[in-house]
Structure formats: structure tokens, C-alpha cells
Length: 227
Image 1 (cartoon, rainbow, N blue to C red):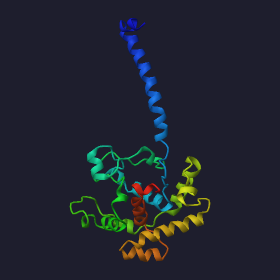
Image 2 (cartoon, helix red, strand yellow; image 1 turned 120 degrees about the horizontal axis):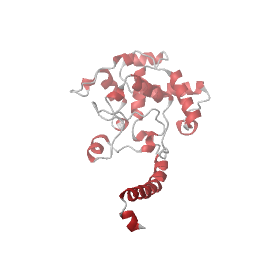
Image 3 (cartoon, one colour; image 1 turned 135 degrees about the horizontal axis):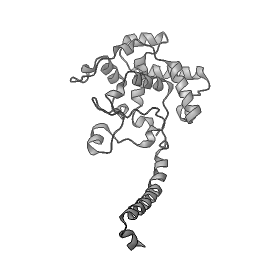
Image 4 (tube, helix red, strand yellow; image 1 turned 60 degrees about the horizontal axis):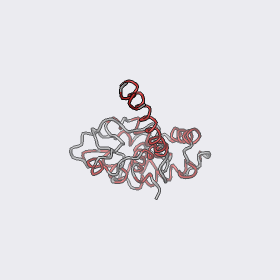
């Protein structure tokens, strides 16, 4: 039989592809299914972080910053541990990006503080002298959108089964409790910011977009994984 296949290139190719495909399926699919699941301890985005992620998307930050570290020594040395597929289980849409005008941000929460982000977003060159990023002072004026972020989180829970009540610490069925946790988390961000207008706005019950965005950036990295 094998000698016959060797004399018939077409059928030999078909047989080779069939065997190779079966072997590939047996080897790849089980690991793929495992990798597609959330890694152990992965925390969903809070409502404030979700609001910040919406700001990130709205402002087109992914056009210049990727959120995917490839398993190459040069990238790991610069940005931190390479990305794992299970880390993206709660990301809809993915923000991998396709261009790095600026650095990758997948681990930015592990290396930068609220104060650093505050200064950087207000005046990028104050912390990165050669930065070409524009200032985002308008984010200090606009209120974050709690209602839309809450609705997104509720959708993520109901349709995709994101475990908010368990790992997220937010009882999404109670919008008042969710708003209370939203404000409490915002308070911790505002406390580490030096901008007095932001602090005064928070005293009036206003959470600006910059606060939500910083919360989201702080969440990126190993901080997403409960220890």
C-alpha cells in the first residue's frame, strides 16, 4: 500500500494531509480549549475600569499602543511577562492593536502609578521628555459614564457569564450598590492625584473620565490576577 502511495503523488499528498490534520487536531484542540478559558484568579474589570476602557477605546488609544506582548526576549525585557491567551477572556473587544507608535501597555499597571498617569495625561513631556503623545486635558473636564459602563458589565455577566458577583465584588443586580463601589474606587484614585480640580469635582460627586481611564490603566498587568 505504501509503495502504491509513493508512486501516486496526488494520493500521497492527500493521505499525508489527512494524517497530519488528524494529528494536529488531537494535539492542538485540547490545549486550545484550555487556553481559551480564563487563567486562574483572573479578575473582571470593575465598573470604573470598564468606564475607563470605554474612554480608552473612544479616544483611539489602541491606534498607537498595543496590548499584546509576544514571547520574545526583547519584548519581555522591555514590557514584562508575555501575554497569555487566558488573560483576554473578559476582553470584548480585544485591544491587541497593530502598531506601536508608543509602548505596549499590557503590563503598564505593574510599572506605573496613578500619579505618573496623572502627570503624563496632563502633560506627556513632563514625564517623557521626547514624547509625541498629545495632552488629554479634556478628559479632566468630562464626566465618566457610569450608566453605560454598568450596562456593559451587566451584559458581560448575563450573556458571557463573566463572574462579577464572585470575583468582581460587584452585585450587578443592584445598581445603587454598584454606584457606591464605583465611587469608592474612584475615591482611591482621586486621593493619589494632585490635580485640585479633580478633587473638587469628586467632592461634588463627579467622577471625571481621567479618573476612570487611570483606573483602567492601573488594572492592566499582573494586577488583574488575584494572588
